[in-house]
Length: 136
Image (cartoon, rainbow, N blue to C red; front, side, top):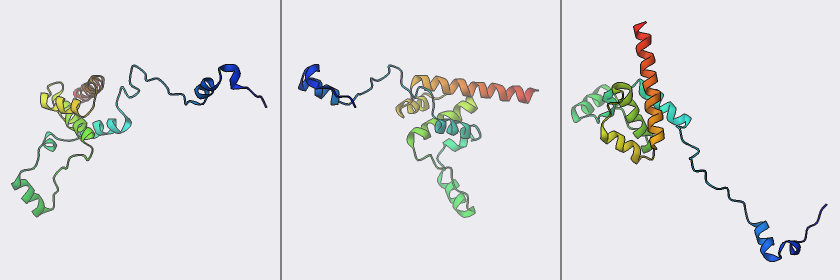
């Protein structure tokens, strides 16, 4: 077993420095630059949803739903995931023609420009692949 006296390293100041926890420095690029697996699953689910899922049901539709047992589509509990779902549904149906209000909601939820570009690129590729499949 080895022994080291801290007095050789500069006394009490060196002992405090040796006992201090090492704190990693933040990277200039965030670790979560893309989307998480949960967020990608929301994008995949949004592919099958209709544009009508973005609207709040009116009183007539609510009454008919309660009469016949149909339940309206409720928003996701997490506001960040709901903003992602809404933008994804619109992107699947309209491509890059997105309302500014939904883009603002997406950024207000905490998503970055890089995540926005990644999302639109991925959905654009998916839309292109599906049109090629239909044409073949």
